[in-house]
Length: 339
Image (cartoon, rainbow, N blue to C red; front, side):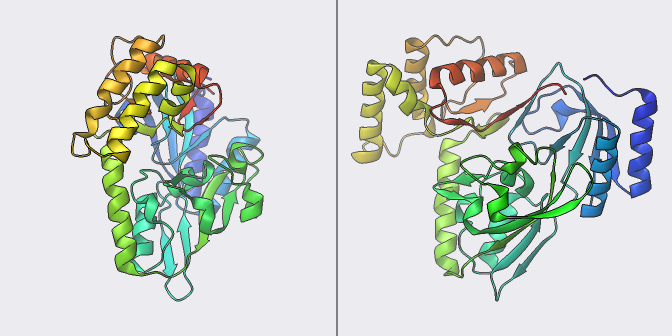
């Protein structure tokens, strides 16, 4: 939808002020989102308590005002030609407490996932090593049951307190959150809910071994994720190379040779991380994919990057890949359509 009328917008501002909620108005999203895309946001509200979040959602819902919950926006593709009326951000809710004796961690929804991982390390708790490089908030991570290297947030999760669209605060158990591969109840029945805090219980471990695993995962992420251009990390949860190999025998052979020499024989293990570029070029030759500005990283075909091509081209690339992949692996990035 278009921006709210001046009168309704003034009511939202007044309600935020009454609740003590910080907010920004008329925000250029291309200057603040992780991918550096998007039109403008009429208002970004930033509650700092669960009660504030609940009160705001109740007001917006009762007045029929559409909104979108956001965190660090590291998985969201905002569209350049779209203006968004109300965004509710979790970034002002970033408290975290750890009970070293019991391994219990309670973290608010705006806590960055790497901070959660490092807090566990500092207290000798194991299970979050793989999350050290995920650049999102805990709320966003819970929304999609974030994971890496075989670990997922649900593995040590007890439950979460959510502010519901009707303004109630409700604690969801692990089972009630319905966490599956890159999905949760937040994407379905509890759509529009705000993650206030999440509770985990982790086992104790050897701090040096925990640190060692985090170092390995950190190095892997830097090798396969793009740090030159704004990006949203992995587009799909799974390997597009494998899926595309199922569609084209020649590409399957070429990618198999690449895998053999780089991961089995390991002849080329000291090459630059961009040694996948030639493999990406093969994809462009074998499949109907043509772009004026390459929308993916040289490091991996599975990473959307912003080279200034505009979001129409980014969305076109994602839709083309979805058609080729045909549901065999899960889309991780979320395209924020007009609402």
